[in-house]
Image (cartoon, rainbow, N blue to C red; front, top):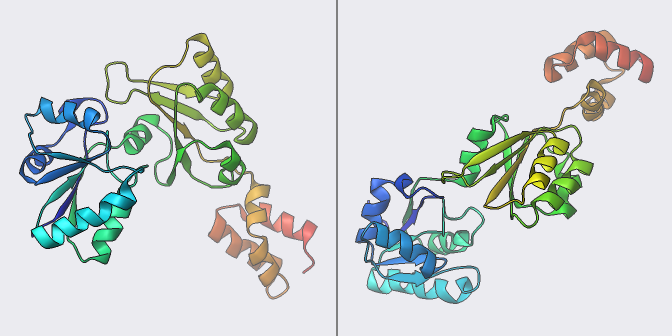
Amino acid sequence: MFFSLHIVSTPIGNLKDISFRAVETLNIVDKILCEDTRVSSKLLQNFGIKTPMMVYNDHNAVRVIPKIIDNILSQNETFALISDAGTPLVSDPGYKLVNACIENKISFTIIPGASAVISALVLSGLPSDRFMFVGFADASKFAELSKINSTLIFYEAPSRIINTLEQMRTIFKGRSVVVVKELTKLYESSIRGDFDFVISKFKEQSPKGEFVILLSPPKFSDVNRIEALLPLISELNGKISQKELSRILSKYSGISKNTLYNYLSENCND
């Protein structure tokens, strides 16, 4: 199938992580859309790619997208979209261009590859069956995020990391923390532990590099988990016996029948 736009993942550090397909695609398209030509030119030079570059970023997306769409439709040009590092559309404005392609029925595809989010999650050892990428840390959203039952993933700058971790410590209490820095690069490293330990490590040595912060899911007590079931308890209590309700809720939630029965006996009228 012919594609007019190729969303191409690039290395997040180690240039050897680029795929054969990515190099081939960057060589054959008419233009490469990049965030910063100074950054992308280093990658292209390393692989002998001479395809012309065109800047596409947050600052010029609204102005540039119509030109890209017109060139595809009127001149049958092909484009590759890359970010400075990693997979486009993750924390960058690529989705605006993809939406424009969808609206204009223009075909596009993905050349998968490196992603700091997924790489950090794999290295962290934290639960990966349910996770949420939040983007750059924003303390005003921590209280809301603390209620989400999943591993949380944040980007953060070295100048802010200690302050961010200290703010997280007051909201995300009791959670395990993993901070990964310089993914796939020479000085890649991970720090694991509670907030006090991780913060102390950064205070020992001034933080440098690019960081990903990962927080384990919240540790819910039985009381927290039962409180989440209150709408269901309110609906069913009195319609069936507390013994039967305990059995149903236990099967639904994983909480023991005895714990549920004791809660119902103490807090609900049959």
